[in-house]
Length: 488
Image (cartoon, rainbow, N blue to C red; front, side, top):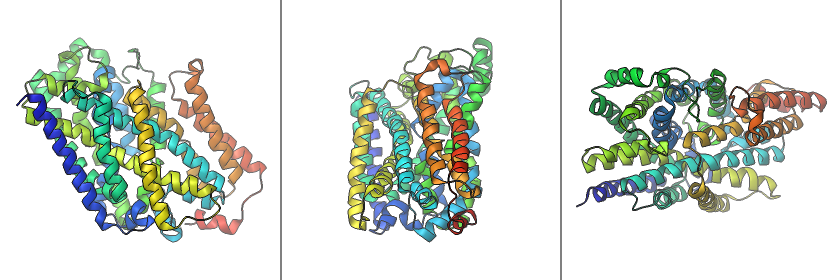
């Protein structure tokens, strides 16, 4: 049997196992919307740890991370930097959010904001921001899956075909099982990709350079600029400290308010489980260390690979590695892609129906119809993202940074929700719209760039000013209502 066919069959076997886990796990949830979206608020520490860890470290980490280390050197360390402290705000805000979720029945992020500010319009705006940010994030995962299939089959399956196969599986178990399917497949996928990352991350430097230390000694001789922080920008020029630092800041601010992460606060079994997960979460960054080793190991051994995001599958298929092992490594890359993609498409569908469609309707949807519409939306959103995945030419990490610029605009509003009684619906709406407008303009007009700073930083600055000014110019909200949230 040809080597590529063995690799392909191992990869298909992984997909079948993931599908079985996803379909089986959905039997544990109730038939209510709370069961489909929030897992009946009963996820334990281990599952919560992996559903967040595996969904955050996705194709962008398993493929984009080595790609950045390979092409931009030390610039890739920004990923570890923001991931370490990204959930820190949850330690202080998470218990409040969880308590309010149980008290008022929230299962999405926008339900909290819409209730606090008594505005359906805010729900629609947040839903729109979330969906606009979700599409490029989901595109990242689909492109990653397509890369893997194209490489392992030596081009016999094109990238668009590989993405269709992998995400056909994802859509089936998300459609059927909801968040429980996401939770248990992420646990399985997270364990798989962490184990494979360490095996590959230590093996490749040893095989290609004689060890991790020898690898970095060689790089220090032939390409010292790649080991000097903050590394290189996308054009191969030195990245500025302003650009590096602003990418970390915007990622930290956006990290804790990504809707598909935020919604997992509602799924925790209790406050103690949630806080324990937050404390242990930084340990997931250890998984990124061998991921970086893979990219660094390829710099001198495999020069000129394009696109750079394919460097991992390119390495494992170019070396004399047994086909069975190659198949497992490719399954790990697929696990990284799918463990984020399933959480994203599930959250996006829930937000589309509960926060957008539900906000513009006059009557409240009954539970069974709401679930049917969310399931239908899973297919629609998956199809939209797949279309862009087939035509987009941007790098995986660039797409992620673009998404963060929009989603980070939610963070100032979250702080105002809990800590500023004087914030008003008009101020929140104006701040969100102004911040997102600035991000769009800064991305469309390159001449506005200064010191390579992330456009989201400028958006955050404008957002805060507009939020404060407009809130001061409009009537305050009822004090008794506001105290429910400020004193939660």
